[in-house]
Image 1 (tube, rainbow, N blue to C red):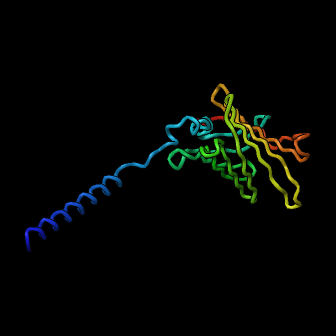
Image 2: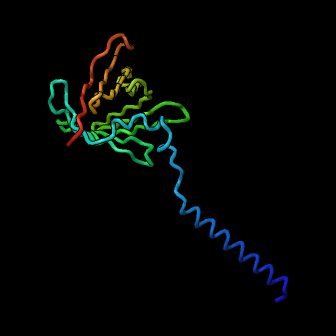
Image 3: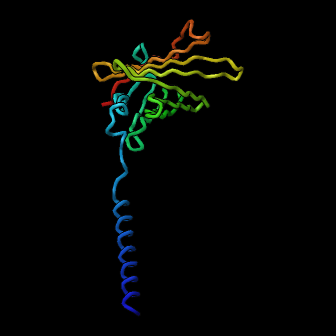
Length: 177
């Protein structure tokens, strides 16, 4: 082998080693976690926890386990109602839209897709659902951080375009001990 060929082989080996080392370094570098550091992604953290949920009469309405998942980008809800209902929601701040989004699915096949904003210690979601008959129902959910660590969820619906509203759910979240 000529000295040129040896130099070329040595250079190729050096490049191969450098590329392998860079790949290994990249594999060890954790992915960026923008959701952990940007304040708008942390606005709904007050809902994270293990909860007993009470109706306005102080009776058990259900339990809820609300967790941060996927690099703390998603507030993930696991609802179990006192009467056998269950459901889950994904809540995420969509930076491209500058809005919160909630997608709820329950064991009866119900789906809610809502968008919202956080201000004044309240997360407010709105959206609409369409029944099998094509009739539109407006949805309005408000999660309020209460001063003593509790959270109130107040859900209203309107079948007349927002002229009148009825309460679909009113629950107070109390942290489990």
